[in-house]
Length: 382
Ligand code: DOR
Ligand code: ZN
Image: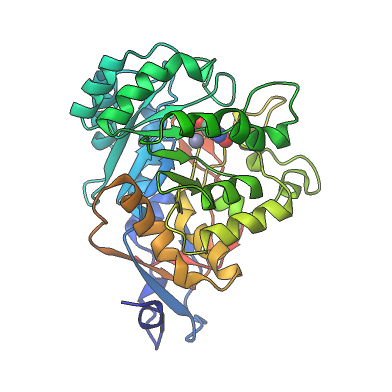
């Protein structure tokens, strides 16, 4: 079905204005429906997937996982726990812990990854493949949250990468160099030349996802590469440039890694995401950190976008009149790139105001979602 058929006017249908239980549990609230705009639109999509997600563990996991399960059929689960997930057995156990906190009314499939280290044995790749692990994540050591166990020199991992290429496991890369002499805002572009290009030359059969790209250089690089290179793009990098971090004072909830860049880069990402190019797909990089850890002298990197992820993507695509491109980006391209079936079932977004909660429960404390307290233009239909 094409976009024109899917976008329909709400002719008197006010059922979307009733709070559903899951939404209420999450603290999201739709505004009163009395003056709902009857010309508002709905957008029905094949159920989307999140190809880059952090859900942590323990009580924090239980707090955040339902938000994603409500929106997405599957998610690629990042392995940067403490200690990191480096074995097939750890990935299987983590998968069980995730499944244990999926609300019974929802179906959700976590897709597991291992954390690549300097000495992850090639044998573990074979065990991982047999256990259903789909990818390994490359964190350059020191690049971001919980990356100290990451790779210090990519050449140390070559035997493991060869095993991955043979087994058909994907490599997901945090694409930033860590050299302190290189300006923070230039580290993604430097990674392309210093690491990614040689890596792709040496492993032409390895499928690689350039995660959470943030620059025009990365978008152009992926756009001109072959079919074995894909990229995820976050909602926050589509919606914001680096001014957001400094608007009227320092705003820690807009600090993530790779950091937000200039407007020219945001526009290039928007163009890539809405281009229809199959190599670009949705990855929220929703990265929960307790409020008090964000609002302190040294704040952790990460934006918590899971509770309103699709609403934020809809806003971004709507801003350039490209809602007709959202379904491929959110629901088809990632599954196709990973060689997995597309989801069955749909989700419906409605152009109806949604107030993002100020805080949400997070283990024994609270977390602030991105856009806390603000009103979004799109919301999920119950
Ligand atoms: O902003 C980020 N937060 N970027 C990452 O790469 C890691 C993530 C986290 O785990 O908090
Ligand atoms: Zn991430």
